[in-house]
Length: 243
Figure 1 (tube, helix red, strand yellow):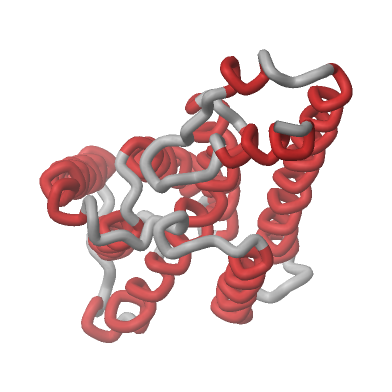
Figure 2 (cartoon, helix red, strand yellow):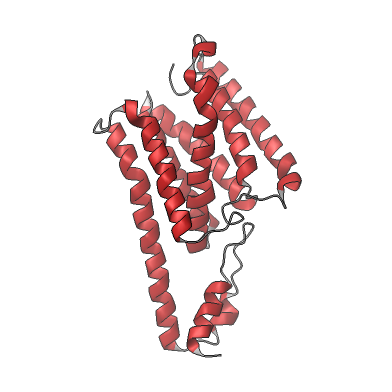
C-alpha cells in the first residue's frame, strides 16, 4: 500500500457513520512514514480551520441581530439563510442522509430515550416557571409563533446545530467534551437576541447541553427535532423568551 492509499485509508476509518466515529488511528499511524504523518497533521489543521470559519459564519448574523445592525423583523429571513448555507455546506461535503442523522435504522430503538428526555424537559420547564413565578403567554391562540413558526424553527435549529454542526465537530474533536461544549456555546449565544438576554443565554446553554448530549450519543435528527419542537412550544407558552 503506497502512502497516498494509506492516507486515504486513515481518513476512511474516521468517516462519520451516524453513531460513533470509527477511529483506528493507532493501527493506521504505525504504518505511516513521517512525511505522511506531516500531511495528516496539515489536513487536520485545515479541518480545524473549517470549524473556525463555520463557527464565525454561524455567530456573525446573531451578533448583527443582537446589536441591531440587522433588525429583529428579519429574524426569520436570517434563519432561512442559515438553513440555505447549511444545505450548501452539506452538499459541498457530499454528506449522506445518515450522516445528517436522518435515519430509520435506530428510530424505533431510540424513541424511549427521547421520550424520557422530552418528558423530563417539559417537567423542568414547568417547575422552573412555577418557582420563578412566570405566567403563561397572553392569548396563546393568537400567537403566530405557537401556531405556525415553532415547528419549522425547531426543526431548522436541529438541522443546523445538531445534524450538521455537532456532527462536524464530532469529526474533528475526538473528545465528546470539546465537541459538545463548542456546540452548546454557539447554540446558547443564538438566544441572546431575545428579551432578557442573560436569562435566555442560560436557558439556551442548559437546553443546548441536553440536546447536544443526547444527539451525540443517540443521533437521530427526526427524534431530536420532535423533542425540540415540543420543548420549544412549552418554553414559549411559559414566556421563557418573552411575550
